[in-house]
Length: 328
Image (cartoon, rainbow, N blue to C red; front, side):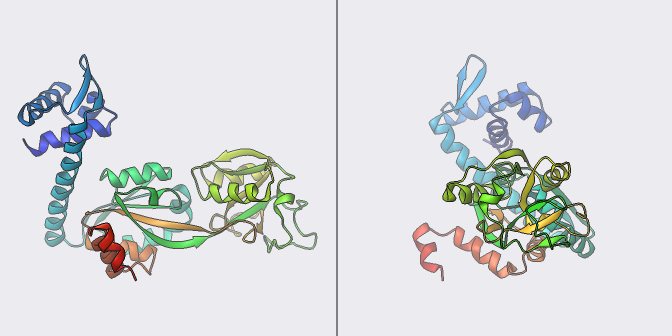
């Protein structure tokens, strides 16, 4: 048994049980992977895969138990490598952030600029995707940190930390009926805005998996109002584009409206209509963070100091009962 065999096993599962995809990802051949998996099964004395002819169709029950152990071994191996790099070169190495479009477009730019200035030798990468994709990237070791509003707390293999709260707003073209007739500014308080008034117009907003869409649905359902959702998109820029074209009014994150840039739109406050959303940051349990990763986290969310993050990581390693007893 060797690490290479465990990597092959893990990669096959990650690639949907497709040996060809695993071979491509690991820059090797299908016969080599099949041979190594066969040797692993022979040494363990069990089948780790259910097969239909030559095709793998599932992981066996003992195979799943072995997969869990293999992933822990592979993660610990990566942690050892990270420790070595930390002491060999403290200010250089890779750092990959997996996040959504809204975070990458509107929140992260000043953080990234500051970080790169501080750590010019670090190779920083941004992976964009939906919340499920970015959570899985951290779990699979493809990314070091995940940042999103939804879903991260649903993964037991992640440590999630709250970063900041944000609210939704409504955006409309100039002179739209929802605007106060006396309002000539880009931003309107919106205290007179109601869900019933919003529902009178076609709505352009986020796809269900993005940017607090659940809070929007929840507000309308609680009020017993059926909104006219005309179009959904995965990012705020697309929403604003279609609102400018007159296809409807937009509901999006306040942080995605920039008055200086969005001069052809008007924003109406909607904090009184929709519950606030919490953006969270996630890291892998039992992972090892380089010093510059702690610094990136603190740049993004100043309250998440190295001590706070380290404490959360320590608590995640304790038995559930003991961990809850140590919470303040």
